[in-house]
Length: 159
Image (cartoon, rainbow, N blue to C red):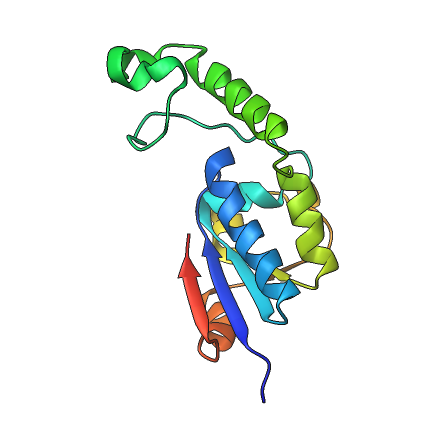
């Protein structure tokens, strides 16, 4: 029987959206899948050596708020200066208290499990990103590189 394959497209660069590609990728690799994650647009932030990921409640109505803030705190006020930093700090504290692994740890776990990371070359060029800012063992390619692998996969996810 052929090895199962999983392709993931990672397009988001916020703290809360960083978890799904790394959790799903590392889990699939642990289950014996061959896994590739294609990082494009804001998802390229997840490949930076020095992560500065934040979370924001703006545009995320499903985000549970502390102290039932979603019931009494106007959404517009979440746009105030400092709110994103506060929400990020609160989320990181909650994750640590619940024993959730850090993005750095999950990313390392993926690489140790031979999950292949592909950075979208077009987006790197578009945003004038410096590959020296990215972690080691990242490959570069475009849509054709993604489809070369994804066309043969059992599962393909867009995150």
